[in-house]
Length: 120
Image 1 (tube, rainbow, N blue to C red):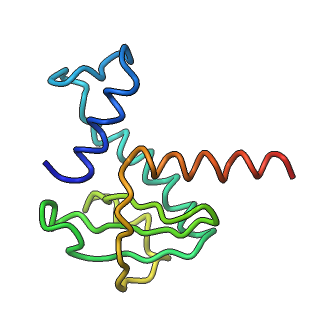
Image 2 (spheres, rainbow, N blue to C red):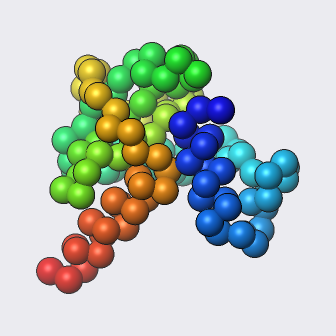
């Protein structure tokens, strides 16, 4: 199981009862349209904060580049569908070292930073 899958499984355990989130449910994995929608938002974040696209970053998903974004609260990253690469033309290709965050930590960092923004 990849780190992304482990993080997703952890999130699902911590959020029981979310419709469609039960392991094995047909809607457990995101349809392409939802990936595309999410990737629009990730592309926006990548335009606002230091970011880099790493090719072949995940040996379990070699065709899916990983976008690493550095927020003031820490690193966040997303695997990007090959079909959505057109959204990331503004992101430089390079290298980055993954800090070990999982899905829960990633969204915790994003939520933490978002909370500081509305207090300004």
